[in-house]
Image (cartoon, rainbow, N blue to C red):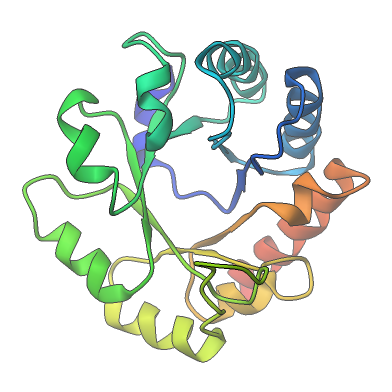
Length: 220
């Protein structure tokens, strides 16, 4: 496991899998192509998968990520489905999973899913601060029960100002048309789901996103 790399990593383009019940071979194919296009961190979040499916997928994804020199993060909801020797490089936490599982993860690198700057500052003031954060939702994603509306670029800008020296990873409705704007607003990188997972060409989609992010980072 690339623990030290994951611990020090600030992903520019962070891919989160989409929990659509894809066969492992399809999931791995998308991730491999996304890494080839410029994704530099991957999160497995197939919450609907069975424990056997989770373990099988993680084994294959871990190989793809190692080959691409990219760390693999696991949604904390899935910790019960894997053993202590799971081939992962870090954990992605939420407010609901943090108190339930934190003590059992042996200091693995951590990314926390936050919905406000205050939530991030609160976590960082504890005895176990996180290594990085996603901040969401920036833009609208989909409509349905429990889906938060996008808060917008101005909210992201104010949040990043409030969070300095921390710089979150922007998440929520991000694609190649707005990724650069998130960086300009102060984000350190962007996290995406559908923009790559649902793309007809995941490698090209990742490449376009990475170009937008890198270009904005160079000028910001």
